Length: 106
Image 1 (spheres, rainbow, N blue to C red):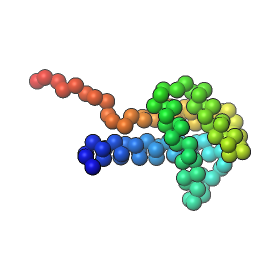
Image 2 (cartoon, rainbow, N blue to C red):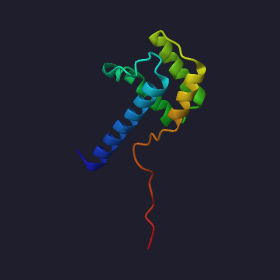
Image 3 (cartoon, rainbow, N blue to C red):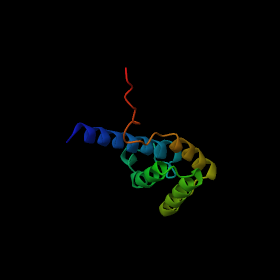
Image 4 (spheres, one colour):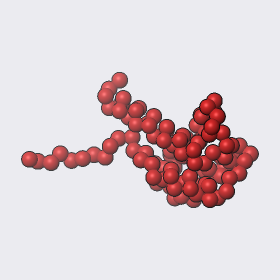
């Protein structure tokens, strides 16, 4: 595996971990954050959240995706809790590669 692929794979894992932590610590509609066996409970939603963040989706679309996930789980959080989660998610850097920096002539 090339260094670039390793770097992208490591970046993807970091992004997934960051999204997982926000979902678990901030959103947590099932209130399972303290359960060590349940730390991957929201992993099924990471891909959807990631795609929305990469597409620079508006906050209401991200909130709607969380509401749909809640519906799927048979629970509901307040819109305030969802909005707080969305704000944290939108702050995440989801770039797989660092921005290209042109080489400056010396």
